[in-house]
Length: 259
Image (cartoon, rainbow, N blue to C red; front, side, top):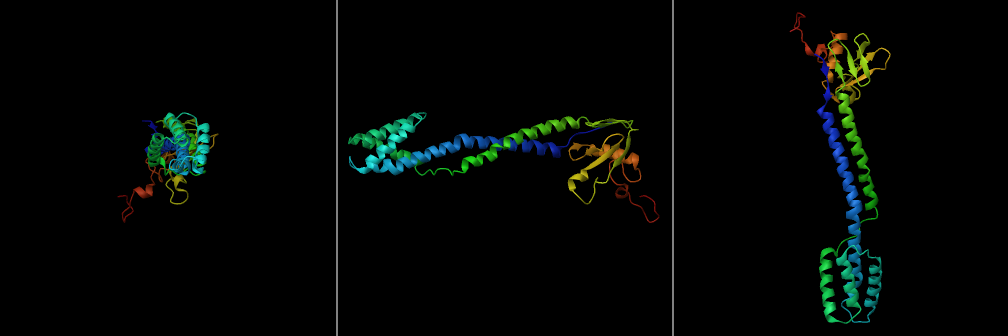
């Protein structure tokens, strides 16, 4: 029966999680950059206008310097206002009318609106000048998210390619080789106790006219069966069909016989 592989859970779970994590962080960065930070800046500017100018101007007599300063600030705010927030635009006009007159009704209405606004966002602090540029670090995660998705689908496609037929023919994404073309398998790093741990999941098939073909059991489930079959064929006294060392699988009694 032919031995085939599939994508190992340890690999695809990590890859998919990383893909979603990068996308989520990237979208979060875009939202903060486009919505949250501009809104915080806008609210801080409104709070500054009302705290520094309007609050003082609504409680002094007509002709006071505070009213003049507030009127200048209001005129500038009205000129810069985009008009997208109709309620705020109406509030600016209300403040302007109240500060420019001695009508007690207008003043009380403006004072009530001021109190409501200051309770809502009067203590808002403007974001740091570094907050918005920092969001690019999160936004740049988006391409990595798509890369991880690409890696998942690409590797999954490769996983369906690996096959070792009963007649010894090996098929990999790099090509297909008959048993006669396979010259051996390099088991130097397989389950080695020293060196880079990640490489201890791998072995290399030696084939004619081609560079060694890497077989990776970390990424591809059941790859150890292909590795074990080839290793057992070439080194039957050293490796079992399950890619385990013979001397680690068998024990001998005092007479030298296998138990």
